[in-house]
Image 1: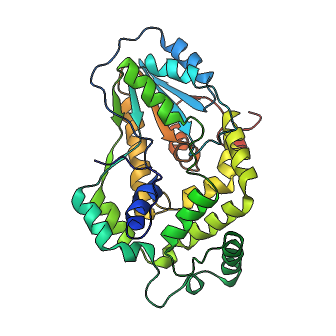
Image 2 (image 1 turned 90 degrees about the vertical axis):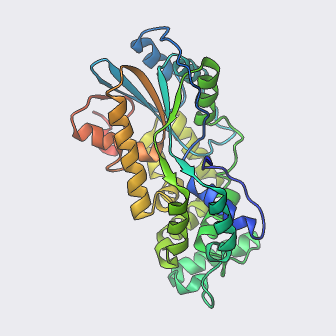
Image 3 (image 1 turned 60 degrees about the vertical axis):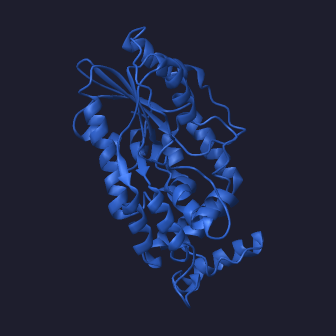
Length: 330
């Protein structure tokens, strides 16, 4: 089993394999300890501790069940400080921790990726990016090629979007502590059970990548170009907004827009599957006694029609920061 979300890049044939692992961004990873720790304090104390952290968090309670949804973003800039100690304490005192999905990628799946690497990494024979992008967006991509000394005209949009976001914008930079790393480490030390909310078959992921025509990647490419044009200042602004619990500002960032438009979240079938798994996982956690702490991508929680909107629609009381503009001032 492979934990997706690794930003590992290589050259040549390996590039196609790395693209699957890097572009998916499904999970922050985690081992699965087998022994739970008894609760050391009350639910109220756990909630108070978690809210002192620099990561936005929402509390949903039903009967004797409480779910703490922690909204994580990819690549908090190294210069943006947030306080992980309170989140570590809350993790240690929870009864269970939920992490995002895993991908069950077998050696046969990896071999298939290598065998079909050209399909993943290159445009169809005789085609270039200009065959799919409008003149305006191709001109903006040309400007980025000139800035970085690259020629992406015959690279697949999977590769180009990943390079723009990971390499040029720096979203693979793990200079700061990531939420998932903090929670995973605290859970391991306290022997709090960690559970992935679901899984996706590796062969299904590969089929999806191999059969998607280039034109379906155009929204991702446009959003990735816009994000890179916004530059490092936007990376910093997004990180600061996250630490200040300004969720609408994070969601309005062109960076978050690109991550939402690109694979897998921008894929109609796969994105729907992943979002549905999160809604089901939260519903299941609300049937478990005690406290469940769940680390989820912020975009899945706070996007229009996302997990928080779904919980609100069903009448749950949600305590935590505003996640939509129309809530400001309530």
